[in-house]
Image (tube, rainbow, N blue to C red; front, side):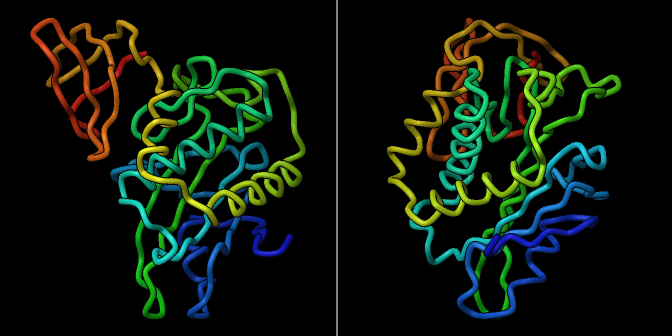
Length: 237
């Protein structure tokens, strides 16, 4: 498929995608693999994936084509992945702030957004890992796959081609920040539900009310509303 490069294996599709940006007008070049050995997650976390079971996908987007803030573009990538999986599986799919994708209370997708300057141009490199066919997650109780959560199986190559086509089509025309934030909050995991949160080793009940354009999550506790950035508080689920 045009613009999509398959690799039998690689250490990181984000690194590989950057290496293919050889021309100044390069845009929407994507790399995917079903065997990524050193995937990265947010804030230095690792993304582990079983070979031949899951999709590691990265797409490069020229920053000049993105007219929204970095925070809102990060949200938009999660909105797109959620929409793709919801349409594909006909299941309820949610976004766990800031950009994990959840099917029936299990994380099936993680997203890493990086910005790199290559050949004089700034690019967003969007790294997306989707657990598609994996069934065993050892002791990671919050992890799942499309298969475990929906009982549906997919051909990985066809899955990746359809996903790439969907991403390119929707990245060519990015909606307004207001629309992105609205769509994000409409599908926010555990929104308006009593949940357990952990901060500095202390657990307490709270209710997620919304995410804002500055990248913060608004949580209502007994003592009032508080705002947090990523990693400042943990949702237990």
